[in-house]
Length: 575
Image 1 (cartoon, helix red, strand yellow):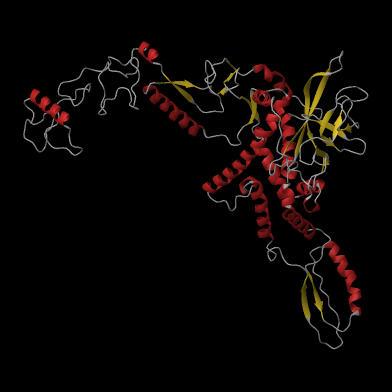
Image 2 (cartoon, rainbow, N blue to C red; image 1 turned 120 degrees about the vertical axis):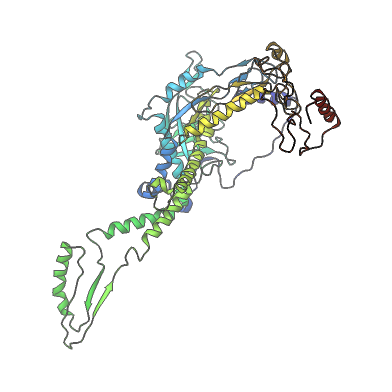
């Protein structure tokens, strides 16, 4: 990045005449330099995590719901800044003539940077997948294994004379399978440090870390950061910038921690319950029970079992009734139950409890699983949607703050960002009310002597203004005077009344529009509304504009009392 490069050059120049020594990075005793294996919780392998997710109805419903909500409205391009200084790289979100820090020249975002990335993201890859299809696979991997690998297939261009790599382009974007993708790092968790490979001859060819050039091509070797263990002798090596690895729930130095591994017992319990219901309604199942008759003659039972088996084949719900002759004439009839009913086992309650635990971990409410039986009330349903929207917002940050910046960095896009649309469309009435409030604030700021400037209006943002103070010269050219200080609105007197026309602070174009002051009026420049009302406590003729009745409030100052006496002397009819 430009900012990192400028600071790196400054630090290098600063520390050039000095000897440098850094703090040692902590090493993990369980790690050995080379291909790192993910941690297997309770011995559960990665294929087993995918198997139980695809088999379990509740778990797959939750994962699929998150996948659909995160990418339901697609993505859009957004510029990172409105102006950027070409000297100090300071970014501004509004229009400026020059840099406010160093005074350097500013530039607009480079639109040429979007030419190739926009075209690439609209193309299908070699697997006939769109960019959103690949992102959905990435989200599926994150929710299951908490590890996702995005492979950037690059095409390198060599100089025919020097046989060196001149430039490259990202040809297509594919998903790397977490079952086979592995991270290569040293004991500290830093990528690389074990193998090197040649970019022109890498399949099955790796060299020690001390090697410098390929003995066949003569090209410089590059450090291996990721490998794809697809099979024996078919290991694929990836260098820095060709694979993007992200984690969602537990980002760490190496691998994440699977959410399905944490919910393994709950998921297997639901699978066992589904299997129980499946076998209970199959044809070959254990009967609910049998009717047995206590007797001394057991041989007579043999002739009866054949008929029972035939009836069970025709009717799986048939209850066998066994009658055996007794020589003593004594016996009894007993009912032997083989299994409990679903109500006795509290099947529904247990299933709902396990489902709620799984859904709560991912942040998916019951209303998104078509279960509104216990969500009664519009307010409760709205709260459930809000909870899921927060889970979707958390999922958006994995892409907008981690994956997309790395992807754009590999395509040399520095002035633009990729953003995901919010899951829920905002109420249009609420948005219009916010815009109305923003416009009212802009009008008041104008009266205070500030100049509002509308930011670039898009369909994804509300109306926003930035404010700059009007220079005194510009205010004089508009026919007014510089704005008054102290937070006083133009046109307001010290006592809160309107000031006379021509006095400083009037908005442009309003000078001379107010009538002259009316003698006897209650304020300078106020409209003549006739004489004051007759005081109920006075006599006829006491309707003077200044009342002698003591009013509540602060005691008048001597200057105010003298002013009132002067006004009364001008109008003898006053009390």
